[in-house]
Image (cartoon, rainbow, N blue to C red; front, side):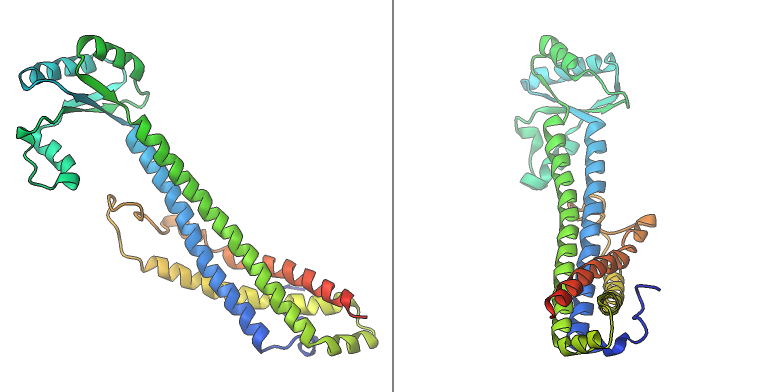
Length: 293
């Protein structure tokens, strides 16, 4: 028999409507809705960690702090060193307009870059194999003392670690949602069992086994949880689909949602909710039946 259909004859054991039915379905729907968003958050932070890691791993920066009359010569020397460094695919000095654009978010668009002692920046695009950062630092220190290499390691590791922790936080949220679903289903099943205590005693008197009675509750509450979770999952997917598009550089919430085959990820949520309800109701039913003399 399917666990998603009430067993024939069980309608007299478990009330088909009432508070417990609404509580079970509403709880399953709400928890499934939250689970879809937790899953979307987990997947979005994984993509964010990958994007940050790839972007920062393929680039580096050299900062040249030198008097204005020496800056051009030191910049040329740095570019020559980079041209002879294995693993450096491309290197170029940023002009004043580009440096002003980098500082605009902090100081505004009208910052007079040419009148301020701002270091000259050299952008490095690395080859897939990478380069020897420590060796390059030593050579720069010997030949161009005013040049400092920043390979973004200090930035990359904390950002990736933070994104990975947020991903685990999403997984932890889904586990907490499963526990809350189990708890609410147990309370609803226990309430229904307590309300039908006299019915259960009569069923025992006429020869009904505890297994039959427990299956009646388990099937009915599992079906309620499955239908409620299906509605909640659908509502969650529609809510995520309706989120406005965010540009790639839009910040942390960039890419919050599903794309392509990722839309299949929430589909197991109703079935997992049904499994949680099945286990919780089964334990609650047998515990309540053992308490009946």
